[in-house]
Length: 345
Image 1: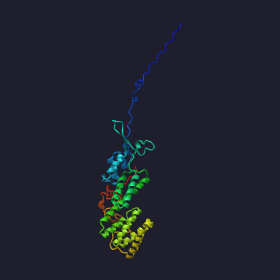
Image 2: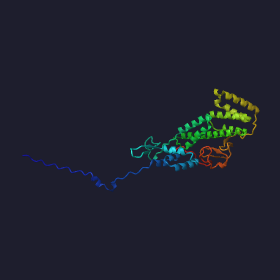
Image 3: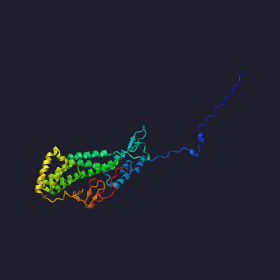
């Protein structure tokens, strides 16, 4: 006789939606809060015009440049600003039929996502400015003064769009700004010399001012040689003697390649000391401290009222230049007191 075993009760079915039915108002799904777009962070985190233009904020970038360096002619900076904007984003192609994705390039993401503290990676660096200076030096040494001026002018236009990574880089960039100013002024004086070759007084004065631009030693040697020859030719022997002395004091004059120039400068100095007079009355005193008027190319003696460019610090004696565009940098106003160039974010 077989005894029937009790039947096992079937397992109750699991209702997968039961938990959802029990969810109250507080358990409803909520979309996460939208984050702040990268370009919005860039504008909020930086006072540098390059970061604002990288975010597409052309208006705020121009306002910053106007406040900081009294920039007024932005047409000069147009190509540099466009390059800064384009270089801050990476465009990644999507799948067929979908648009490309724009990915912001950041300069402070080395240790991880910076979040709301993000800053854009700018396309221009100090190394690019150094390359521009070298081009300007090379053209200057070769006598291609228009090309040299354009090279230095290009560096001047790019400096406001460079964000430095350290204080040392910032100081280096400000030094480059001074170099560009001095060389552009020297080249403009050189052009004025060519226009006044038939005027012995003005040509001697301009050649003298040319030697007071802060040039590299090898370039100063060329300037002093030219000024010495011009002054001696027009029988302004006091000026010629001064140029000859300064020329002989240069370290490069001791090298063998400058032996002939050394002999010539010595002879000019001896002859000039014998004659000891200037035939013409010159607006030039070697012993006085002065800066060069960047419009009229005349000396501005220390203590004389003058106005300066807010960006490149070119000096002008005429107070009427206040509010006008600087003739050196060509895009900033003269005579406006500002904080000056901002190099870091």
